[in-house]
View 1: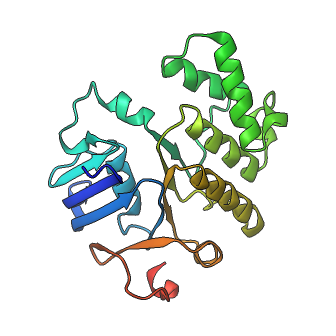
View 2 (view 1 turned 180 degrees about the vertical axis):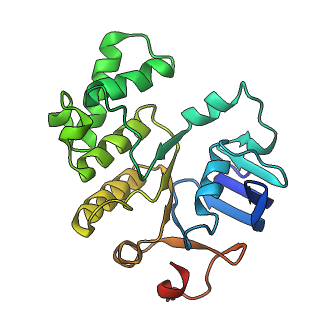
Length: 234
């Protein structure tokens, strides 16, 4: 893998429940890039993201993510791959029975952290980074959708991953809140992290332009023109 590449996909076929949804996918994403993955519901965006995280196995083709060969990765290596990747979900997936602090503490303990002071320090640092330090003792239901998404982003950043995979992170948010979340992602990207964001929010793409890959009609391609016809594609 090229040392300047963060993600490399070659001749990959993507399946959803044994149905082929994307064929012959070839993508190279450089370290530190911000890339949108756009397409209609069911076009294969989420499945492609799940392949990068080794949530869906690669049955055909080659996938390299942060120097891991995902197409032939062993079960033992998957946790190591996932320490290089932070995932941000549309529906948050926060643990509803514990505070924001304990949500983040759970992740650190699950990924091998032992030192209590180090964990406290990391949680404080990352909540401050996403503007949610004030919410450490709150329960998820006490937070707005935008605040919950900021906590999810904090969770994704805890282990200082190289790559952030965001699957429709503004899908459940209003426009103004979405703008705040994208500003946060841009700040994270500026720190050197690679971001791949699946979205169908054309207003966000127009306000924050970046390299865009389109999932459409079983293919993934980079449009020749910057003027995408979003009404047809999203």
